[in-house]
Length: 374
Image (tube, rainbow, N blue to C red; front, side, top):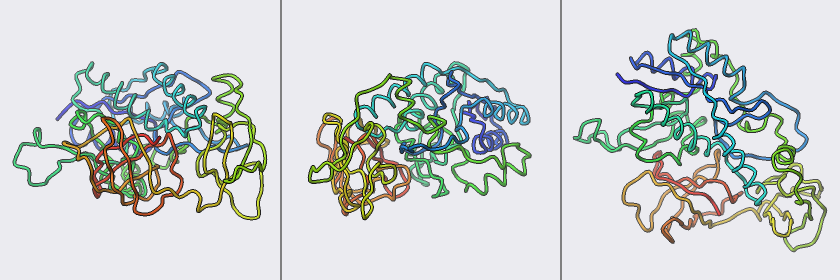
């Protein structure tokens, strides 16, 4: 068996992953990644961020001191080495990205960046330093051979990234950005289980995290006040402006366009006789455009900063695409329009296409790759 560095967040999923890896005979080294901050946390699960206006403080996500303590206790119970390392510089890069995107009128997805830069970037660097062959996490996804009948050895057969077995917990969307050459070095032990099965396994193993609630999906800022975070992190910004309808008529004002994202319905600051949604954000004019639900539909998008998990990407191909974490994959045609850009044409209009979010392409359950929506 192999030496494996496991990202331990203090939750039930990574705790169960540690147990499974140990039971498989691997030499497991647990690693908790500290953010170096006390007031903010960084993400481990999945979705893009949605502003919550005047939301009450909630339990912190991963990376808190209590999570570190839980991770250490699980490691002690399983008798595996455990390290807590300070990744403040890398978390600072994520915060910079988060602030830059919101102030540019886009909707960031720091969870994808956390996976790209930390869990399967810096974590892999650490694994190589300690002579580990694999890195692992508690994500609900799977890496497996592309064919069950490949005559080559397991070490040579081509691998792909696939959805997790539990469709309600699948996290393959937020993993699309991993480097293809790393697939052979990634382990997702819980990916073949459902969430209830993982909780039951953790309970049988006597792990203290068996009943621990999942960390919240919006976990970059504990109080969910993104405007306050941006004020602290970047200083007060001149982002207030007008709320307008699709014809350009002013219907109200807002305190800053960074408080909005495409598809948002609540917290608009104005009321109508029927629901209205954020259709478009225009940072140059500071306008936030509101419209009806049908105005949200888009049949086409463009994306760049592509990452492919397959060989020989066709110039044009048919697949399904997912435009946010919990979006139902939609049938589409994809056409490469440059070395690092493409266009997606959906069969039917898709609601809430948000610049700054990822679009991820699938062939059935296999992740083909993805990019960032412009």
